[in-house]
Amino acid sequence: MDPLTDVFTSMRVESVVYATLEATAPWGLSFETQYAKFGTVLRGNCWLTVEGEAKAVPLTGGDCYLLPRGNKFTLRDHPRTRAHNFAEILMRHEGGTIHYGGGGAPTTIVGGKFTFDGDSSRPLTDLLPPVIHIRGDAPHAAALRTTIQLLASEITSPGPGSSVIVSRLADTLFVLAIRAHIVSEGCSKIGWLRALSDPPIGAALRSMHGKIAHSWTVASLASAAGMSRSAFALRFKDLVGEAPLEYLTRWRMHQAGRLLQDGNRKLFEIANLVGYESDGAFNKAFKRIFRMTPGEYRTNGASRLGEVGLASPMHPEHARKASAGRDGA
Image (tube, rainbow, N blue to C red):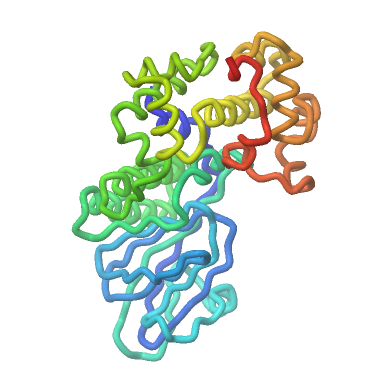
């Protein structure tokens, strides 16, 4: 199975909010949000600054951007222009078009945010870079712009089935942005997305996602990758940023969390589905990552993760805190 497809299958778009910004220089807007954000520059030029990133990103007509993790960010006509809080500006406007700026050179941006159901998006967003920039002349850029425009049109003029169409377009937008990023020069040489395009490591990832309950060992994964055990373990960690069985453990725990929320399966059934023959080993691994038992998670849901200060189970930090029953073989 394609790991990207596997991860996207677990994501559930809850809502999409869209707006058009008609800005004239000088202008600057800051956005404080915990949601994934997207946008495309229809005309003009601007600068995108994302929290935690050292360099501002120049955007020009045709460029698209995606901020998967919900980092704070700023859009402005010049890196030195003062930015005002977008939420305050938004309160002064009605409708889907926002006019703002000093009357100089114009820039038009169509953008919005995604809201996902609970923790469903975190396995993917935790594995993505904080900012994805797709240049207007890059592969898939035209498809991205078309998808954003279709999304904006559907939200502006809804009809029968609009909620379904918007959800599907949102998924498509994410996939197209990530696909464009993978083949772009801006894609890091290290990370999950780059690992997917690496033939041997990509083969191992597809094997893990395709047979999550299989008794995988480093040796068997190395065989799937066509490499020696030591060379595979080193290359996997260099590309993905963590050991193979650590990655497998976290993905198993995410899938277990989904199963606990989605149905009435007994705990031993869920344990078997994600690769554990022993209820005790499954419970131990689950609790080490989520800091609560599977039963507590089923009762209280992902809402308690914030109470205990726990990030997504797909974050590498938690892999170092969990052992995984059969994973350690």
